[in-house]
Every structure is written in C-alpha cells, then in structure tokens.
Image (cartoon, rainbow, N blue to C red; front, side, top):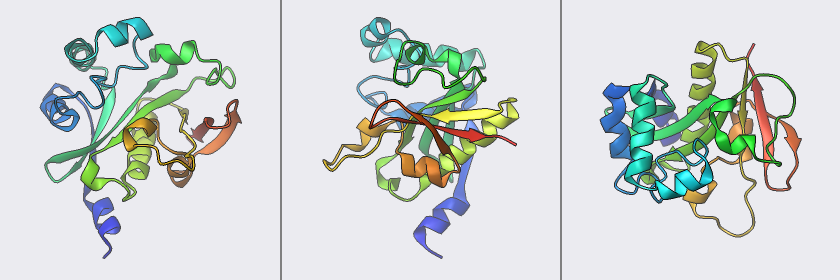
Length: 195
C-alpha cells in the first residue's frame, strides 16, 4: 500500500466544536495559522481583521465555534490534527461581498470554501483533495446544493505554501469540482453541484 493510499484510509474528518477547539489551536500553532489570521481574513471587514491579528482573531473564531457555527472541518490522522478546511454559506464571508473578481456567478445559494491548510509534514500527499471531499459531505449534510471554491492558479515562480491557502485548481478538479467562471487569469471560480 502506498503512503498516499494509507493516509487516505486513516484520515478522519470532524466539524470543529468546542470539544475540538484545543485540537484547532494545536494545528494553528502560536502564529494562528498564518500571521495571526485564525481563518478570519474573509469573515471580517479588512480593517477589523488586520487590527485583530493574533488574539482578537482567535477570540472571534472561538466565538463562532461557541455559537455552534462549526466554521472549520478538521482532518485527523489518529489523534493528530493535520488539516483544516474553512467553509460556510457564501454570505458569511464579508470579503466575497466586495470582490469584483469573485462576485456571484448567478443567484443560486452556494456554500464557499475560503481556506485549506495541511500541516507541513503531510503536504503533497493528496490530503487537500480529501478535505475538499469532506467539505462537500459536510455542506450537503447542512442542506447545501452547491459548494464553491476560489483556488489560485500556480505560477512558474515557486509560491510558498501558506500563500495558496485557497487551494489550487488541480485539487478542486480531483475532488470533482468544475470551473464555472474566471474573471482573473489566476483565480477561477469552481463549483461542485450536489446531487
């Protein structure tokens, strides 16, 4: 059995609840994922997000979890949290409401995937594809009909992994998404239609 197949067979997914919060903190580490983001970059107005980098953003995410919103899905290998995927109904992401490039494709209700993160030792093993599939499953359980993602097209210049936090198109394609719009050369809008 290949290492990748073995990882797939052992990976489990859970929406973050208060019970899982310590595991999320463990995965995010002292820097709160990336520069104090705490996965709030798209959920808060820009000024509030930047002013809150660090503890304020951590408290904002914790509040969502406490209110029962389950804003993140955690992926585990055994008891170790190794990945997360942030998703919610599109209207929960303030950033999307002001983006010309990522404005709505049509009037349909969608769930949006805003962020993917894989712990460094486990990257490049297809775990992001598994997390996207888990996101589809979770969204479907909440009644979603369409799940949307906004990956970044890789360039010839090596981009550090933390800067492709919305994922890359090949992972979305492998998870069954299709490109439905592209208003920027580097940023397609991809969708999965839930049967």
